Amino acid sequence: VDPGTIPDPQQRGIYTLVVKHYLACCSRDAMGKETVLTVKMSSEEFTAKGLMILERNWLEIYAPWERWSTGQGELPRLQIGSRVMPSSLSMKEGRTQAPPPISEVELISLMDRSGIGTDATIAQHIATIQEREYAEKDNGQKFLPTKLGIALVEGYNSMGYQLNKPDLRREMEAECNQVAAGRKSKDEIMGPILAKMRECFQRASAEAHKLDAAVARNFSRLGATDNAAVTLQQNFSICGDCNGLLDLKQRGGGQQQQRNQNARAPTKILYCTTCAAGLELPRGAPSPMVDPQNRDHPFRCPICQFQVVRIGPGDGYTGNGYQTCPKCYADAPADFGGAATSGNFRCFNCTYPTCSLSGGTAGGDVDVYPCPFCAGGSDDGRVRLRKTPRGYLLACSNNSSVGGRCQYTVWLPKEAKEVSVKEGEHTVCRRCSDGARTVRRLKFEWKQGSVPPHFDRHHIGCVLCDEMLRQDMNVRLPQMNQVASRNRNASTSANRSTAQTRGGRGGNTSTSWSSSQPREGRSGRGGSVRGRGRGGRAGRSGRGGRGSGSFSGSNDWWNSSGGPDGGGRG
Image 1 (cartoon, one colour):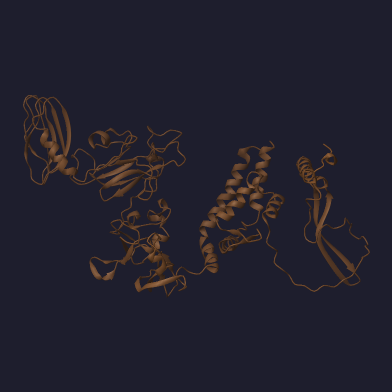
Image 2 (cartoon, one colour):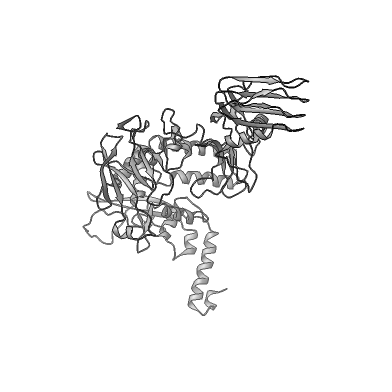
């Protein structure tokens, strides 16, 4: 269509823009050279930096909406030694200035010229830097770097990696374009790219302290200014960095917020006036812990030497309370269970071997197997080992006390003194693992006197296929829409069920009980009774059947095995 035949000027302009944009996309790239031009007049030299365009190509079509220029703009095409006649001579006074902020359109153009991003990903990149608060827009819709963005650039630059530059990503995307064009294969480019990324990641991880230093230069310490926090109690607890005293402070809030019943409780922090360390505390009523063996000494975390704080009900927290180290809460120790915790590390997550407060499990950060309840969902859960006051269990990673969705739980035998799982090929169950999933075996260490003497003190098995765990130890796998639970009065229930098996006929029964006093019992007629537990019963021979038992009294194990005439005496 001839644009001249369109009477409406606005429609004519839109049509012209669409057509030129389409034709420009089909045209060849423009070619040019960024040039420094030096002109000598008598003994003076004048310098200009700009662009010499060799081939305009798509720029010819897309004019006047796009111009290509750098430095002082487009320079004339000249040869070395050429003579030029200046049209005017002027002298200006000025000073260097920082580059002005750029708009989103200018940023997209800059990313395109730098060879990073595609039409499908550029918008997402721009949204990401705003979501992460690396940059923000002012009232004029221009991008301004935030303190966090500046600290990030300074930190990475101090490591020797200018990750704010487009070089690394441009190189990676250029390799991907080679694959798209068929000039290289995926396998050819993946090795070098991953090696370079791995080197960069390892370097950044090893020198993370430089990033911390850059953040510290751009941000004030938590609780350092009184206008951001109000002191609730001075000399509250002991600092592990300098052995000074930490003050308990409260951020924000005030009387107006306290009068609002629906407002979230203000955050409490600990601040050291000596070394300026600032640490945030979880919700609840904090109180410093003392050593239960010596009430005059504080209870210190053996990892970082900060005084442990007990969190009780209050400020929106309604639980039973727990202990946490303020330093570990903010910076979880990776070597003692912190790798499995994204944040908010408490003492019951810790695996430090000699601390009386640590309640974590060795291998709690290792995936035992994929959760069958979450399989195929948007957030696939991983079954991991946990330890609670009621014993060991396997639970889905999507099951937590705060907003947990998946209720997959497998209670492990109470006879286990310790249960652990480790990474490595030797822990993989070959029967249950395949290309789609990896299933790991658990190591059980039994409590003394809790299992029959023919059992080993240790057992390694898979909860999905080990017959001994499922039959002798009564490990049950949950079904969908069923919640597995452990009865707090399990020993009492076992005693009752055992009493009901006396005199039974024709059935096979497996029971577990505990009793402080030995009692007398007999095997069922025509059946088989098997007992295990601590504090068992003295047995008599069965009549007309076959009995076998393995019981524990208050001191030693004893066994009875029956022949054709019945069971033996203990």
